[in-house]
Image (tube, one colour):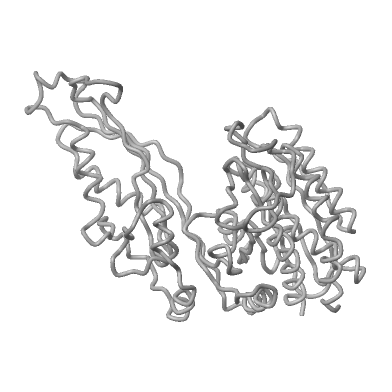
Amino acid sequence: MTLDPVLARIDQNMPDAVDRLFDLLRIKSISTDPAFNADVDRAAEWLVSELQSIGIEAEKRPTTGHPMVVGHVDGPGPHLLFYGHYDVQPVDPLELWDRDPFDPALEDTDAGQVIRARGASDDKGQLMTFVEACRAWKAVHGALPCKITFLFEGEEESGSPSLVPFLKENAEELSCDIALICDTGLFESAVPAITTMLRGLLGEDFTITGPSRDLHSGMYGGIAMNPIRVLSKILAGLHDETGAVTLPGFYDDVPELPDHIRAQWQGLNFDHATYLGDVGLKSPAGELDRTPLEQIWSRPTCDVNGIWGGYTGDGFKTVLPSQASAKLSFRLVGQQDPDKIRDAFRSYLEGQLPEGFTVEYRTEKGSAASQMSIEDPSFEKAREALSDEWPRPAAYVGCGGSIPIAGFFKDMLDMDSMLIGFGRDDDQIHSPNEKYDMESFHKGTRSWARILAALSQ
């Protein structure tokens, strides 16, 4: 099967592809709000119909929450699983939108033409790049170049409560050679990228209690230990002067970055001064002996996400509060075990509590980091295919955030994932006026066609 006529077909039919994307964007598939349950269901049905229209055996599959869309098409070569999600974030605050978020439109900007709508980038536009690439393959050659399973989720934006049970119940059906995930973006909005490292996540939400009630600072100040003072000391002690986390054993399971990956990252010429300057900062705050990209992608972190206690209203209330609370998050890498890190933190915290103080925890189970093995030749084939489409060569990159689906695929289906997407840093996902660049939609579709050609050889 030759590639050039497929690419030409994508170019010729881009206006029709945009129209189809607009049809999907008009559906208010907000998964977290029960008021939109019928719309989420309608989006699933729309996708089933689209897949069936290009010869894919597809159906809407029930879960305890919103449905999954599952499709299968047979073919030669490797068996690929493509994952995307069709649900979207709420649109509030609506008054900050320049137009109806579910009335998609093409808009000319100084940076080029964009598609403006909720879900344009996250994740309907990204999802449809792959569907449109498959459509072009089928139109030109009458078949797809390899065996593909499609899995579209309707709960990603609301925590994916049904995903793990669904994967477990359908593991045999969904297990493939490798997964393709489209929920990422270009590096610095310009370099095509395959994300191979995802940090894990552990959260701690806790309250320490000292005195049995709030105390008058004139009567008890000086003699009574203030829980906010205790909490401040605990939090301040989590980092040393070099930016390193001080918990015993915290770095035991953190691998060193391979030299060839470090060299590739250095070749990206990441401008950390601009990256920080855009949010009003100047200097990196992580480990001083690590590059800025390492601090974001391949090193673990500990951050205070919230802290409260005592009186915070207008004026003054001179009390020593009974309680003080905080929320922390740890981004994990390598083989760091969330349970082991939690135990280390709690041991540290409880060792700092004065006599008579207690602590209460309110936390959920953490998730480990995911790291893909790029020794699989498929990764290099995909990287070269991306490089052929974009002006700059594609790179293997890390991601400072967490995309749990990649870990689920590894743990439950025993397959690595390629995370490839074409979003840009300014797409305003989860925010008002979300957009997706037409270049991303067009070249993203062509990129998937190239990747399918490369992986099927």
